[in-house]
Length: 236
Image 1: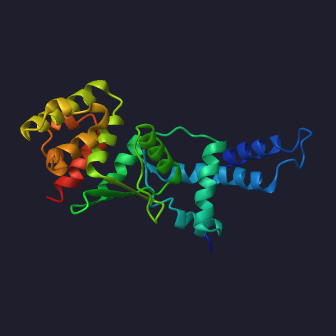
Image 2 (image 1 turned 120 degrees about the horizontal axis):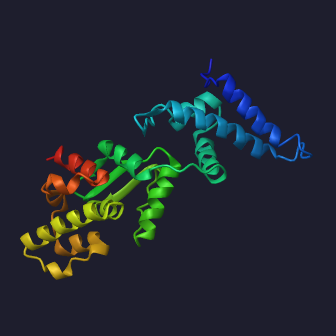
Image 3 (image 1 turned 120 degrees about the vertical axis):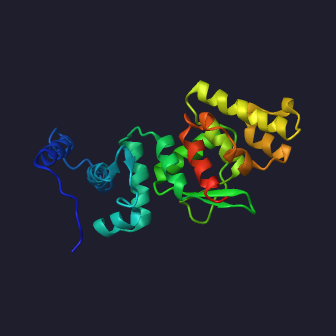
């Protein structure tokens, strides 16, 4: 028997009122089946995401595409499509930077290719990250598995710095990165704050060493960079 979410009586009343809005005001049967499916999915995903949130962070293991597909009896690909349509139709503002940082703990770093691969379970979170990178002027290395985000470590550092909303925190990090430039006898004047990834590549720096040697004070205000430092430190 499939497991289903349990709605409270208050939720059932609220959801029925919302459905009634689409049928009982001279608009009976004007909703298409796909719109009705999406509305019912919206009620479901809103509930299951709330149940899967712990201390402000989403536990994606509890609301994976696989679990939902088993619950609803539809394919995982359709689940992902519905998640994207749901966000477009019923937008829900989330802190993508915090959600992304929480996933880095289970990322993989390939010391040969210098690439970091992060599994992004939610398609809307992936879209937010991809859009941010593209607005920075970068690009995402598309993988066969559409859940994987793959970036060279230098560009991962750039993403982490650019995503920092705190000006003071960002300045501290940039200052420490410039020190790394100087320590490597590189021309500090060629360090481009807007293109940190390229600057590190051009310098030929060992980005993993730079990360683990950043002072704790420079990492404190940046969750993404802090988690990246932990990931690399555990591998060295």
